[in-house]
Length: 93
Figure 1: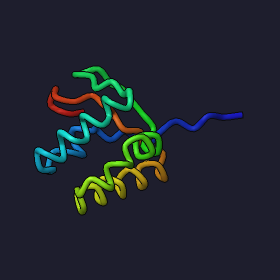
Figure 2: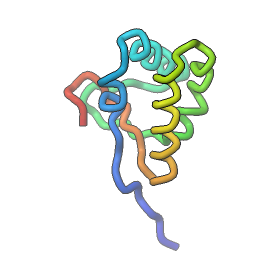
Figure 3: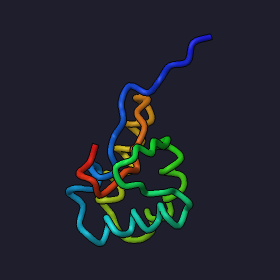
Figure 4: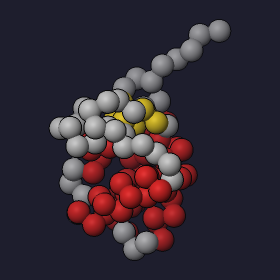
């Protein structure tokens, strides 16, 4: 049996770089509340579907298009076998 590794990773910092500060802070806070560790400069690879499931309640928080774009990106990453790197604040990966 062979194990297929993720093709690449997607940085959380890159995902949020164009987001408005309130949305960016909401995402970071929600991830921490849900038990994810936001690392600085140390890769922390996570499954995009798990992230989406964990913080999906933000869809009801009036973030509209910002949430929709993040959700679609996470779904696309999951379908492509891409992991999300929760390393943040060290210039991205």
